Amino acid sequence: MGRIRALTSVDVSAARELLSRDPVSYCFVDSRVRSAGVDPWRLGGEMWGYVDDHDALVSLLYIGANLVPVATTPASRAAFADRLRQTGRRSSSIVGVAEEVLDLWRILEPSWGPCRELRDRQPLLVMDTDPIVDADPEVRFIGIDELDALVPACIEMFTQEVGVSPVAGGGGMAYRSRIAELVRSSRSLGRIENGVVVFKAEIGTATPLVCQVQGVWVDPGMRGRGISVPAMAATVRLARMHIAPVVSLYVNDFNTVARRTYESCGFRQHETFATVLF
Image 1 (cartoon, helix red, strand yellow):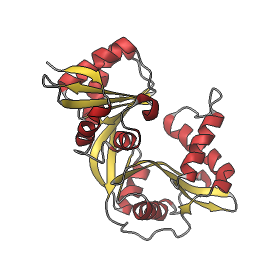
Image 2 (cartoon, one colour; image 1 turned 180 degrees about the vertical axis):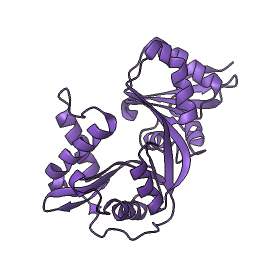
Image 3 (cartoon, helix red, strand yellow; image 1 turned 120 degrees about the vertical axis):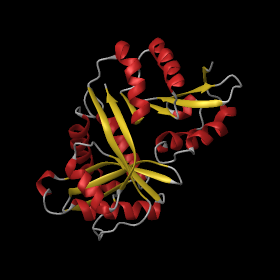
């Protein structure tokens, strides 16, 4: 029988080995471990491990703003769920490989449910070559002097995508700081015309191997003009040149417009994600 324990510094190598099995699917947790190890104060969350009778690491669970299962099995998911029922829900979502997320949620739902929304099919797409279409030369890394123009676009995109405003409940300053951090880290890309954001996207997480695009948005007044495909092509090209050679993102299966855009750029499906939103 396996057991759960909090990871310590001696477990970092074993955790990295698990994460290396799928650098694309596990990019978020991999980036956190690479930058902060498994210490909760630096990690911004807890890292639980499921170990076998020989104390070998079998599965991981990251518990922060997101709850992310890594390389879980039916046995480890059952064990993680038992522990999570005891601690209560602290995360605003469960996200990751669909098979793992949906099974974990099946076990947790009787005690944690209901969720606000379940997105059970989110293709995880990937590109490891330059785009197959021409890139928009106006898309570039956004400067910190453009933050006032960028933040409203980010708020609008987040609200449309997640269903709640990121600045609700007095969270405006914290959200603005997060966007500013992305800009200063050269993780925010866009096309800005006369002080108006026409297109924007962020690199939400990255390792030396893989980076993940999030927050893709086109000004509603500019939609239907063929902006998204060349803008995404430019985003991929710049990300591969400056951040990581493999670019990934995940998209809701019902968002047919976005899926066509990504297909036109040359993205292919790597895995299927799922997200449980609370």
